[in-house]
Image 1 (tube, rainbow over the protein chains, first blue to last red):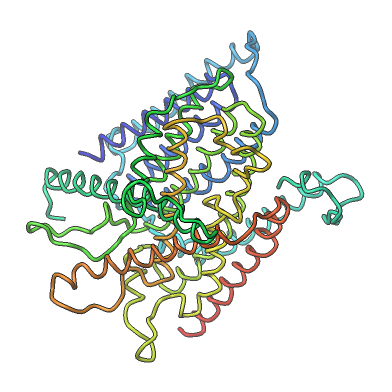
Image 2 (cartoon, rainbow over the protein chains, first blue to last red):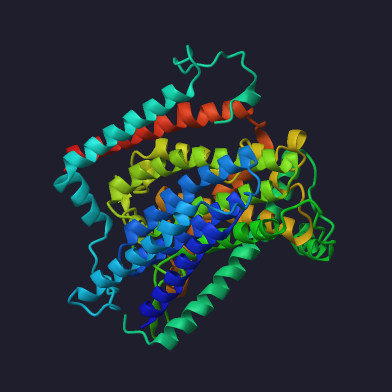
Length: 183
Length: 347
């Protein structure tokens, strides 16, 4: 009972924050709305018994990635967006697409055997750190390692793209004034 | 569980009230301790006029903060300017609710953990909550709309994100050894003695390097000397809280000290054996002693914090980043590798 109440509370917060993300005109408000979405989704994970996933969701997405978003917005001092009339294509195609998507989702949920409103809130989800570790490091070890190599390649690519031509050694001269080296 | 909802709610509320009162008192007296100790380190007396040994000084400070004019500068972005200190303090106070300070207790026939709640992955949740703490500081710096605040906020968020990695990795060694994320189980692993007299605390079981990495990273996470660049007064006036006054400033202040206590508690739980210590005397003393040992270890850690503050100068910003990324981070990774190798070989 309590779990159902909490599910609706955090579900509502997540949806409201997601709408707010789009409605806000200032980038920092949008970024903070996204943080709220992440945190509420983490609470939903927690309600399903995926405690590890919930903690990682908060630590990685809300605590690290979104901090960098906010950091960049602060650094660039991005101002409010200008309100435009919006594109005609988006208006003509967007609304039917939304209706279609919502209909598809509703149809999928309704045609499943379960009652549509029953979400598994019993905490029987296999989400303990041990279960996840066995999945990652035993059953799906190869895909996991390949993904990490891919991420490494992406990081190196970002470094190469970001550094000016001819300075790819990544070693700043020690005489460089300290103010320049933010990160 | 065998608890009715009413008992559960009543017990939780009682525990929350007790935890808040104890924590806020501890925060208040940490400021007193800091002023007194730094005073003695610098050959001064520190506070001594209000009450015996200046013991009522925190009360006077609190009253002063409440009665000061709450000034909101006209150029700030108001919603976030007001939300930032609330966020800081709320997150700082929340994380303490997961810190076990002793064994389970039985009150009136109800058996309950002494902390507010006992979570399976308590450590991860504490890390998650503290990782959100950076928003309070970053938003305060940004919404104040002043160059000193902005620079302070930027420095703080860069520093906290960087040192969080070393901090998290320094804990992994302990987690590998204990095989659990539950703080209570981690502490239970550290009971007893090796070779008859050395306590089986993790710091004596090979995690001493991790402890020092944690120590340095924790100082940086809480923005304390020698890593207090976000509020370096000689360059940034007061950093991210330059534009704040009255209780809003006090909230940042309280958040900083509450974070210090949380960090000290985690160090105690993970490295210093938690509430384990010699037990003796009648049964009531045996029940109180674990909490006493825990408090003593936390006190020792905070003493170290203040001692370092009274002793060391501040880092330069590039030194800070180089130290975090080029020294602490590789050291923490090496510790993880060595620890996991040893644990794997022992199995």
